[in-house]
Image (cartoon, rainbow, N blue to C red):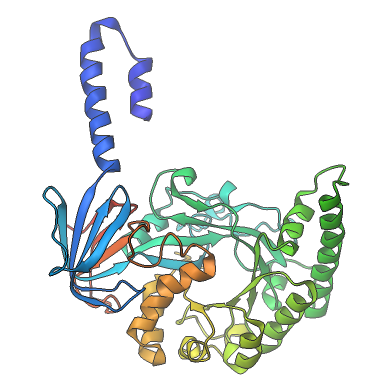
Length: 414
């Protein structure tokens, strides 16, 4: 549309016919793109919501999945653009990252994942910092990651809000799926590397609890219509207490995980555990709380509070019936992101298995993030986010042949 606006602003009667023809051409291209009809054929199609389909077909129309089945049961209509691959999966989901806020230059101008002026800032919105043009966003897209849950990173008592975006588009509005998904909370010693106060674990929790108690009072007054002036910090925490937003709590050690569960019981807010390096030590407690886990990057460097991390944690949580998703997470060095499918691959090789790992990367993540009505599986009516591979998705030498997001082919390998 920006080109059409430019045409109108440059309009002169002498050039009118040329402009009309060119504008018509642009509108035709835009209409065709918005109404693309595509047939994806795969030797193996992982629908995720059902069994894999041998020699499967996925039909796409108007940005949505139209039909899924075997080649024997689906006739590809005339005029559909055909794409073929060895393996076809739903678009992969990175369930916890800072990409788009943290950039690959590792300079002050592209590092917005942590604001160090205050250790408690739930009012900070990821949508106000997200850069859809960031190189790392495109990099992940070319690896088959079509949706990211991104935002403020760990390292503050409350660092800010998170959001969900597709890895396409040139503006945040074009990419946006959900503007306010979770509030990022961190328990443990990593807060001390960014802030002089609070210092100890008990001080950190007392600060968190005090703010939640203030938010309870604010929520009550808001419900009664007795708030005289808006307080963005209290509004965000009141939304958490009202269940309108979820707490994403980074906690690695068993003791910090237990503290997170204890605070959650006290205030009753919805919660997702993040990191959870020692989750295998408190599996019963996590399962009883009904809390899902976005597990640490499987290949996280095992030191500090993550020193007891394990390749097998995802498998153990899955076997216990605890919902699990994978993340690229946050790294303190360039390029500050990982490729989540390789983290899942290691977990698959250490007890989780291929199909369970694909589930955790797709529909499992979508369920935890509350977007499983749109993405995560190949089902009619869902967003047409699809990845085409030339082999096993978890094999490092396998290539992504094509990526389709919202029914548009956004990447094709040369």
